[in-house]
Image (cartoon, rainbow, N blue to C red; front, side, top):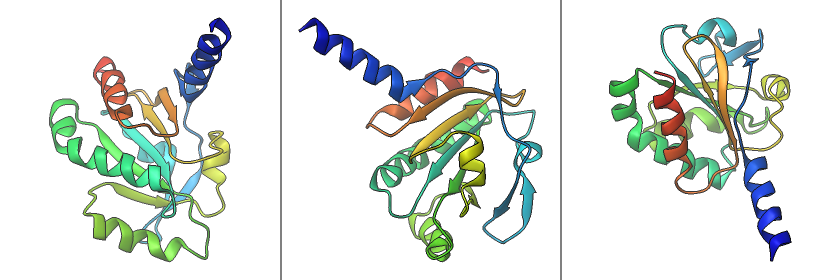
Length: 162
């Protein structure tokens, strides 16, 4: 029984990681209109930012982003947070990204990372993978995967960045 509890704790710790002294890469990414943007420069130093890596074929991603969409206005009003989403859909399926975002009514700023350059630079292996960047541009929290309610943990970290 002790081994099961220990193993469970190790799994939980590997899913949710508190990042220390990690910053965004100085890398260029394209928005949904094809405009190149430097990710590090895009993230404002005046507000916290949630970055979610996702893909159109990822069911947990859809659930996470839909749940974030439900609380986004409230979070934005309270903390000033911006949520941006970075699709890792490859070049064959990236044409589905913008229509999918529009069909869901998500108000997030979207970017494309078809070659996974940004994902690799942040050690994103699978999606969903979500980061919280504080006002100073430091990654202060990250979450790998999605379980219903993870947005509540993200919110607690967001509030602590105020």
